[in-house]
Length: 311
Image (cartoon, helix red, strand yellow):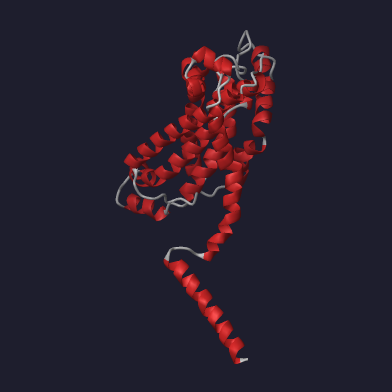
């Protein structure tokens, strides 16, 4: 009995000593709970990303013969083929204005909806309702409402306001409208979340000191809201930059809405050039990272503290 108790005590002491030594090295056994998440990330994110990068260095023989560059033939083709490279600017031409518009419009609406008034919940529901539609239904709705034979054009023509139908879809305008409709609810919800975390007493104190609403916004609210605005812009930009259904359904897929996602799709499904499709996808990520870096750099000049919001 004594020997058994001694052995158990020694094991307990040894286990405690091992935990103590691991803790001194910054290792906690509770970290083992992260193993499933790490495996999940490796299988669904890291491995596909690494495989895609490796695929970009396996260009087709035809690509190597046309553009040269050996293993880098896909990247050479991406930068030298004007039809592909121009799609970078066409995509930015859509994504940047759409993201900027959604953020700027969301700010005054979020400010207004901070206050309590009758019908607030109904208005908030209407603002976020497009989230439930998705890009395909949004595009279909635009075709029905704003198409050449849509409700809007028929109403305007029947009332003699216009002589010919307005071209609001199957072009740049159609895709921009789709991006605004689908992206605005995300921008509004995020900015509302950040704005709700800013202490109202700060604005009240500034008002007591004689600051008008413009001064309160510029010197108190905007600096505190800047991190949230930067994050919101980045998320809405990434959402718009990866546009695919809208560009295909309500845009001009071979013209001014020839976005990068469409080019990757064509390389993958039409040309069966998987390595070129991976190259375009990787370059999409690079362009997004460049824009994100510029946004964070600009935010650092405006405000260096942490966000006051809950988002």
